[in-house]
Structure formats: structure tokens, C-alpha cells
Amino acid sequence: MALAKRDEGKKVNSNINVTPMVDVMLVLLIIFMVITPMLNNKVNVDLPKADAAVVMEDANKEDAVVVAVTRDGRVFLGGDQVTLDDMGTKISTKLENKTNKEVFLRADVRANYGKVMDAVDGVRSAGVSQLGLLTEKKDDSSTPAAK
Image (cartoon, rainbow, N blue to C red; front, side, top):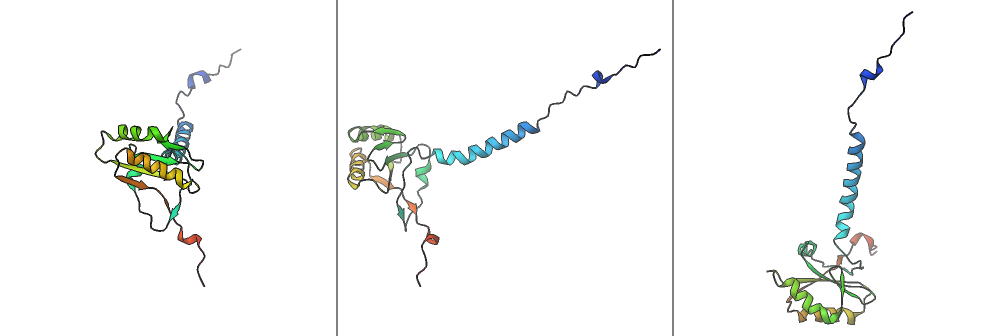
């Protein structure tokens, strides 16, 4: 009487299947590619639309000094909320080691004009001569054609 032995234990497959890992990595890469441009603007404001908008590439740089005024009148320097009294000194310290002394202002379309002018005065008190007002370009396709 003979016993039948199975030798399946000798045929163990020890290869790692990397296909699921590659799938997960590609999904994460796509998510980060979509989210990264949104992280540039730390304070969400609805920018006004302008016909003659000029592209300011320096505003998208990592070390750009950006002042934002929200619709409720709060003022932010980068992502930090500042008071109008402290804004001039904080901008001066950010610009002291830079050769390009330009500041960019992002103001909400529904912000109080007086609050925006107070922010401009705060920027000017820091000795800034170049102030860029950021807007969005009007979309020509959204306006109906005149008959």
C-alpha cells in the first residue's frame, strides 16, 4: 500500500505583486497634482474680473509677499491674519533680504473699498513702491454677442 504525497509546498510563489502598489501611487500622484495649485492661495477670495488683466508670474512664486483682504474686512499676510498696525513692520521684515520689493494684493470683489485702501496704506507704510493688484481675466465667451 503506497501513500500519495503532494509536493505543493515546494512550489510556493514568493514574488511580490507590485501592480496594486503602482495603482495606488498613480492615484496619489494625480490627487497631489490637482491639489497643489490650490495650495498656492492660502486665503480664499473672489477676485474681481478685468478686461485688460496682465499675467503676473511673480505672484505665484513661493517667496512672493501676498496681502489678502476678505469680504468681511480681515487682512492676511500670506496665510496669517494681521492687524493694519502690524502689517507695515511684518512686510518690511519679509522684504529686507529680497532684491525685488514687490507686494501683491488680493482683494475680494465684495470687500469694503475703505478696508482695501487701509491695506494699501499699510503696504505703502512698509516702503513698498511696487504693488500688484491681482484680478482674474474676464471670460469673453460668457457674454452674449450683441445683435
